[in-house]
Length: 308
Length: 202
Image 1 (tube, rainbow over the protein chains, first blue to last red):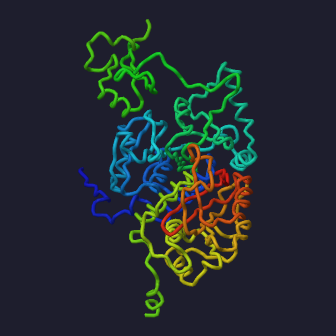
Image 2: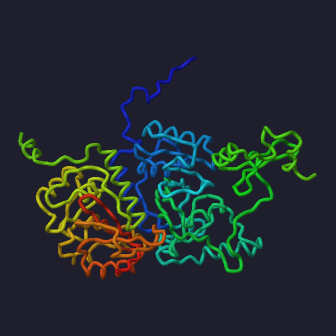
Image 3: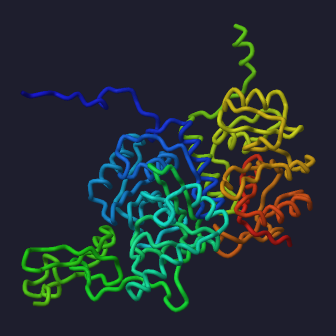
């Protein structure tokens, strides 16, 4: 039987600008001012229920809603891509509730909300990067009690984190943590950079843009002011280093960007593409070509083939 | 009728609550994340007797029933109190230790600042913010600032800033992560000092 579902948004009373009520925004804004004043410290805030499930960026959405104004241009990425479900729905959410301009171009955005990546293009002073954070406490898997992790941060007691990284070395010969790699902020707070690949960690250091982090389920906000020292934890004899690859992007040929692996068939064929879709598209527009680009002659695309 | 006669001499708040408070907050966020950089007040607001425009705008944008405001004796006029109670609904305390936002003029006796809440080691965010109303903010190199939010250094000058402020601020900086953040509010401009900012007085 056919049913008609009335869209509650049709003819419904208007939302407040950017969905949240003004009192909620003020509460978040006060937390944000404290967060930038104490870089890397997790400020508790009264996180609200949002019209999306936890894990879909409710923290980032609340931070964006508190920061965004009518003249902002919003870009939303999920794992670097503008065209994935999470990114598209959050972009539409703000296009609808705040009627702001949206863009897929990193250079044109004034606010970029991100899940698990930092854009490849260098960010500017007039941009704000908002991270969606699942678990803000870097010590949580080492110490489940919030009362204890609070104390550890208060006392700057981060030995346990170094033990964890050391155990990586003892077991694997190198630090095997590849994402959510802990950082030391301004020589004081150990901070979880959210599950970004450690490839992105160096971009956080001394970044010109303001970086804001929102964790909706855990109800924490933290921040990095521009030009703040962010150092990935390491040891003198095992210095921090980012991943490197032999491969290039199949579409644009980039060798300096973070690559996603795409399985092409069940014969072991695969290709790599930039995880940052805007970076890749911009390079293709500029004429850069990778071996698997559709206007490349057939038969040259053998780089990605698995060794038999 | 009684209500009308009571409210008729009240000044208006923001023209547009959502847009104006957002614009003021963005200026405050920029100021706090780039200490010492000077931002123009992005909106026009009416200031009651006792407060200036930028301080009024900051309170309209940030204060509500969850924040206690303390006004120095020279700011605590009836019209300032009425304005804040009507537009922000914030409790106004005479106990400076209770303050989330403390508002004072630069010519006031600033000895109260040592009583402001600085938070504690586990919750350094439970600290007060000082809104200091000043005549003029400029980038003359009276102070050289460095720290998070500052690329190399920023220059900042606050007209008539007393020596005692610097002594207090140096102590405040050593309390990190605890401490008080300062917002300087001239009638038309704002600048901030985060608790992380290192100040060299020239």
